Length: 84
Image: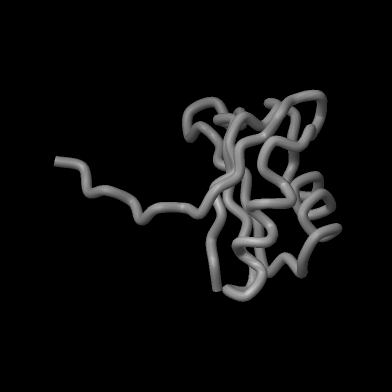
């Protein structure tokens, strides 16, 4: 399973929107839009999980495309860095 970071999302983007957009390119295993804990508003980024074999192709196909009027950034997600 490969996790992809999706940035520069419009605030109104839902998980369904993300799933719909990425499922045109590959089978989406899961997706989530990250929200602010205090306000519940989108933080403008999310994550999409696809098969390892599809990861690079999805990044190439989706990076720089338009979603909800904004040009999205797609790349392979890096592991979270611990907070000190």
